[in-house]
Length: 273
Length: 354
Image 1 (cartoon, rainbow over the protein chains, first blue to last red):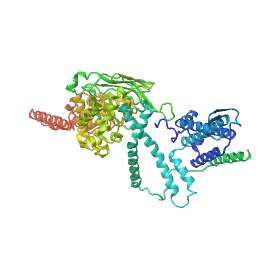
Image 2: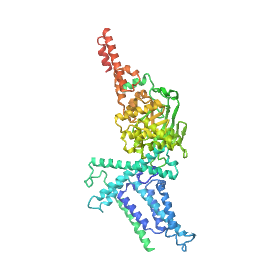
Image 3: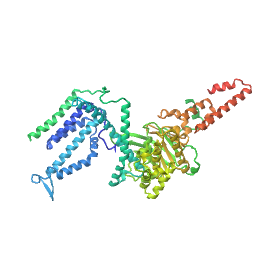
Image 4: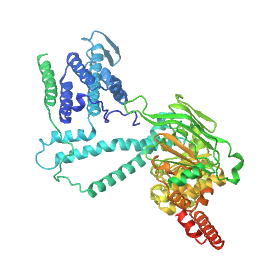
C-alpha cells in the first residue's frame, strides 16, 4: 500500500528546486493552483503544462516517478472525465459542437469531450505539482514553510504554531498508519485472507475489518506521542529556536515572482477573451 | 574472551559456517536431538539459494533488504534468528511465507518453490502449512471475540465451521489458555494473554512450520520463559519446525537447535549454539549483543582450559555444575601435585588460570 503511495515522500537529488525555501515552493504551488483554476481553455492550460514540465525537469527526478504519483488517483480522474463528459457544461451544447452523438437524454459532444479532457488535465497538473512539492521538500521543512507562511496572517495567538504542529503530526502519522494497515493486511494474508486474491466484496469486508485495529493503533500512537511531547517539555506558545533556520534567497524571490505572474496572466486572458 | 574463542575455534569443532557468499555453505550442523521426531529431521523443509529481496523495486525508494541469502532448515528444528535492527530478519520470514517474492535466487518452502516474477501465485496452500506471527501480533486481532479470531485462519483455509472451532480450541489449549477466553473480546485480555491468543490464531490453522517475529518482545521475564518453553514443546512433541526471530539470544539458547545470524541483509552465520559460541567475538560486529551465558562461559573457559573441550551448557544450572566440577577437579589436581612434592603447584596453576 505504502509502496504505491508516492506523494508525501522526499526524493533527494540535490537539484536547485530542492534547495529553494519551502515557503517559496508552497507559495508557488498555491499560485499555480490559482492559475489553473482561473485558466479557461486549452491555451493557458498548455502554457502551464509547459512551465510545469520545465520545473519538473529541473528537479532531476525521473518523469515516470511523477506518473506513478498520479497512479493511485487514476480512477478518480476517470470518474471526473466521465462525469464531465456526460454531465458537464459542454455536454448539452449539441448545436455548437463539431460532432455530437445523442442517446436519449444523454448527448456526447466534441465540446463536452474537450471540457472533460481539460478538467482531467487540470487535475493531473495539480497532482503533479503537489507531488513536486513533496518530492523536493522534507516533511519537516514543509511544515516549517507552512508555519512561516501562516505566521504573518496570525500575528496574535498560537494559531500558526498549532496548525504547523497538527500538520507535522498528520504528516508523520499518515505513513505510520498506512504501514500499520499494511502489516495487518499482511498478517491476514498470512492467515489465508490475501487481499490481492479477493473479489471486490471480500476486499471491502477485509478493509472494514482493518478499522478496529488501525483505529486502536492510531489512538495508542496519539496517546504515546502526546505523553512523549509533554515529557520532553513541549508547550504550545513556548519560545523556541529552530535547528535549521529558513533562509530566503534571491532565487526564492524570482521563483515566487514567476509563479505570481501566472494567475495574473490567466485572469488577464480570461478577461480579454 | 577473544583468546578463548581462538583456542576453541582451532580445537575440537569447526566454527560456524559463513553464509555471506565468501565461504561455501556447509552441511547441516549437529543439533540437540528431538527423540519423537528424529526420523523426519534430516528432511530440509526450507531452502534459500542466493535469495535477494528489494523493497519498492523500480521506484526511487528502492532499498535492498536481502542479498544472496543461502539457508537450509531441517524439519522439526527450532531455529533462532538473530540480528540487529534492519538486518533483514523480518523480511526473511515474509519471504518464507510468500508474502514477499524473491527478487533473485530461489526460495523453497516444503514443496513450494518461490522464484522472482511469479505472476499472481495462489499461495494459500503454502500459507496454511507455514504460519507467520508478526511483531506485536496482538495488535492485529480484529474480530469481536477471541474464538472468531482463532477461527479466521482455518475458515480461510477451507475448513468447516466445526473443524475451525475444534482447531481454535486446540490452539488455545496448546498456548495454555483457558476455554473461558473464547467468548471474550480480544482487547479485554491481558497483554500476555493477548500475545498468546494472537499466536494461537496462527497455530489454529495447524501449520507445519511456525515462524514468529520477536514473540517475547515487551513481555515480562516469566511470560517470556513460559512462551519459549511452549514453543519448544510444540517443536519437540508435535514435530513442528519453528523459526523465532529474537534480539535476545540468551532466552532461546536453551531450546534452539540452530542459529541464523543476519547482518545487513546477509545470513552471516548458520550453526548450533556451540558454533555460535566459537564466533561470539563477531556478534558485536554483526550488531548482536553477546549473550551473558556466552560471556560467562568464555570467562570461565579462559580460567579453566579443560572447559573448552565441553559443549556449551544450555542452562544456567548446567553451566554452574560444569564450572563447579572443573574447579573441583582443578583443586584436586593441584592438591595431588602438592602432595607429590611440588608445593608451588597449586599457586602456579591458579596463577596460570587467572
